[in-house]
Image (tube, rainbow, N blue to C red):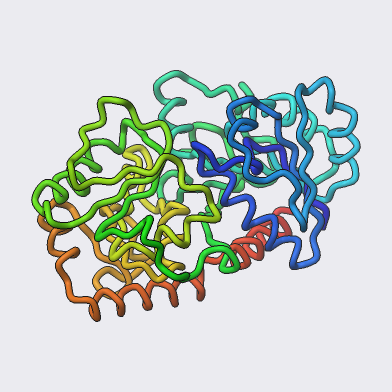
Length: 353
């Protein structure tokens, strides 16, 4: 199939979770013989932190304005079998109009479902979904499953809805030699988000305070100057994607913290969750409904609701942690790779035609 995608970004992983997911998914689709063209507005904050310019297996179209790329976009959509618009695409409304007028299978992929639904309930809309909703799309995909799918039908008018969860590219995320630069007992990798701060305080900073002899490491962008650091917490500003395997492979354990809006819906595995597990790093995660659908608690993942739970996890023996890490990696490779998701996407598209 020929697919055209109008998205937020695939060229920069800085401060967003879209790029890494799309890189894995586009590569996997290409390996299966599909042609992919990704349209991305060339905004300054991603241009200043760009870590991909010329993908090898798919085409990236960077443009400065919709007017500039309008004719090329029309041509791409007219030649495509599947046309996808994503959440937070800067030109989503124009892209939606173009896609909905085409003969392609029309897909909207919300990679920010929980935020979308929360804003619809609070403000009545978002700037990347048309005022008339999603009823005209053949298929609506959601990064979050569970009851969020029902709300997309009720609030947004979506007719055919399915989850397309995060995934991992096994060519990128795998165990590598540990790096002394990233060596730690518990790590956390994620962009700062105010609605994660309370959980991060409980499950990361409090254990660091209780275990002053242990080393904790936080990597991510946009952390405020008044963030409550501990003396035994090391900070790395934006760990680029090629460094993620070294970051995780150098961590005795790593923490997964879910944004509160997503956790309220459940069925919300983050890309980081799959990445770290693929690197065979034992994961300590906050709890949310549906987590056991992705990993078996106690065997493939450790679940924490308090600082005590995290402290106990860090103090587990090396062999027990190693077994948990290996089991998690096996689970990821059996069900949660980009290849699995690309095949799910193709099946969903075929079912929608």
